[in-house]
Amino acid sequence: MTNPEVAILMLSLFIVLVMLGFPIAFTLLAMGVGFGYYAYYDAGSINAITDAFNNRIFYLLNQNTYSVMENDTLVAIPLFLFMGYVVERANIVNRLFTSLQLAARNLPGSMAIAALITCAVFSTASGIVGAVVTLMGLLAYPAMANANYRRDFSAGVICAGGTLGILIPPSIMLIVYAAIAELSPLRLYAAAMFPGLLLAGMYILYVIIRVWINPSIAPKPPQDREYRNAEIYLALLTSFVPLTVLIMLVLGSILGGLATPAEAAAMGALGGLVLAVLYRSLSWQKVKESVFLTAKATAMVCWMFVGSWTFASVFSYLGGHDIIEHWVLALNLEPWQFLVIVQLIIFLLGWPLEWSEILIIFVPIFLPMLDTFGVNPYFFAMLVALNLQTSFLTPPMAMSAYYLKGVLKKQIELVQIFKGILPYLGIVIFCMFLMYMFPGIALWLPDQLFGPYIP
Image (cartoon, rainbow, N blue to C red; front, side, top):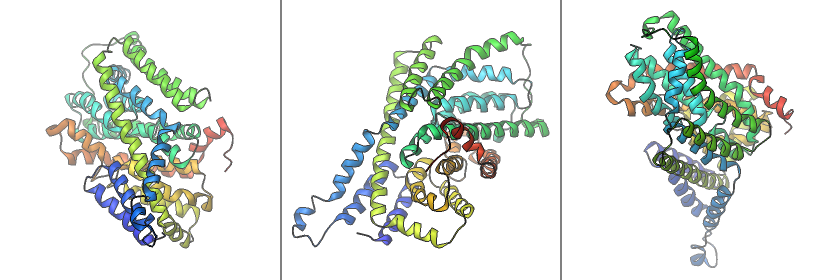
């Protein structure tokens, strides 16, 4: 039953319900089943009463649930989550932040630089923005506050650094994108390496320049004693190196074709447990907490997939995808104009929505148009991945700001956090511009590793 008006109503109602605070996964399921029942209902059937209970939407829901559960790519999600939760609860991040702080002690804004690098490394291992921002808010913010760092500056560092995990591999967001767009997660990981490192590097460069221009926002903390190089090397060796080596082994096995993302994630989960044992910080209680949180987060992701695929199937059946595609094609856009409009839409959607809703519901609307405009799907994926950083940094619904406010409570005002994250929002947009001007930032590494992309 093609009915584009109902499809647009379906999409609009979904946005309204999400903004009102309804759970995303179950809202998608309810909307998909409700509108799907209408779409597949045949009032003219001879057995209309019987068919009312045999509506095809229930078969579609069952098939989508089975498809999600048998998807090999998604197996990596709970394993990467478990690795992150184990690392978080083993106090490895505390050691990491302390050692990096010592190593960067002679640079302007040394504690902010240490916080950014810690965020990047930990978020790479975790992939959970809320967990990274929350933990770093408890760990790094008090340290910077005691060193008389300006509050908005410290908050901006933590919020921006905490979002890097959805971009830098092994990113859970890229696994989700690979499943949605039916792309190779290996090529996506390779494509994200340089953009992720570029963005992290630009954050650090911004901090150094900002503090060099205005040292009062991040005074150099007094040294209680003079540290010898041997002590610093030992601190880095025992905290930074093991976790970094674990992550690089996971990434190297994936990019080198030695293991699938799921196999590499299993190795990472085992490595996280080994590190926790070596640091003598593993307990049965921490393992139970990690397993529980992993199961909880995985269930949310899986049901979100089931709901989104059901929602998207009904939306397409009603003609929603067709009407949007026809509207875009009727504009007679150049490829660059198409990219600008799509990225602007995603940017605006980042105000009320999180990356998961944007990625699962809205990005698939534009994927079929990439061939028409001759856009490399991996290049488009990296533009989207960078753009999704803004969904955590754009007021008034910047979720990273709310995560930080939730743990700091009265120590800082929400307006101060928003003020601190705005410069990083500009850096993300500038990084997108650089990647558009120089596509090799995203495409060079996957082409070198796997050969040129052939549609």
